[in-house]
Image (cartoon, rainbow, N blue to C red; front, side, top):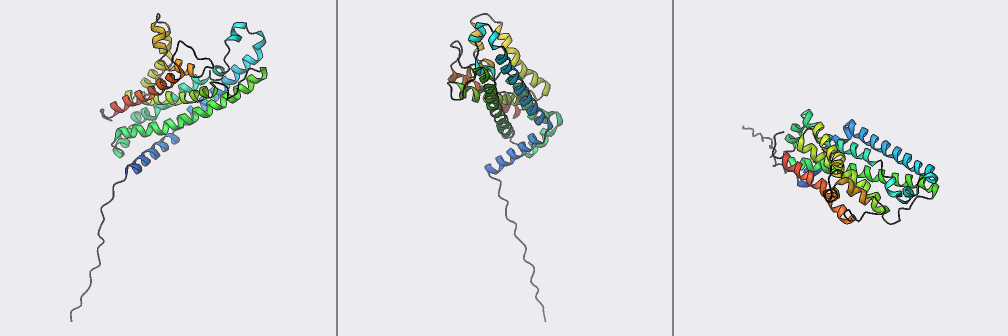
Length: 279
């Protein structure tokens, strides 16, 4: 008698479904978020920015309150309660710009960028993910710091009845612009990091653009000084954070357009270069 044994059924493997665009984007964003929050320099840059800006904001506001009665009439006439509370943002600008450079240049210096590009071969997508995650962090820090400095500075200035309200003309625009400027500076740093792939070179270039170039342009003869100077980031943000914008500079609307164009241009240049160079 023949016994018939049934062979076990073999599972038929189904072809794997490729991840959707949304899943790939989500994975890239998640990986970049992990990188940023796991690096110690991120927290140091944030701490330096916050402490330096707040301390300088308090010192400057206190100076005007304690010495107001002895100030010359010309200095009282030019006093700007909006510009005063944002004078310390230069420190935050430098820290955030340096952090933006490190977001990508540190991967090149450590060799991690090869692993990143092996896992995500679309290099421009990697750069955009870095810009999205870091830009969101920089914007949130900037706006929180900006509103905090405004309320703190105006509370001190109110001791001499020099403070203003957020509902006063130009106040909300100034607060939003000051916070947005940290986002702009950070993305400029990120773009320079992608362009140069050198931490020292990119930070030096950022310092030259944001801090040294205005000094050079200021030494030019007229009308070059004003024609070029009104497009510099420092003058753009000064115009937006002033309670009395200058008629010699761009209007606040055009200041917003040019200011936002800066990170777009630097990021586009970084995306162009990053896809044409070896890691």
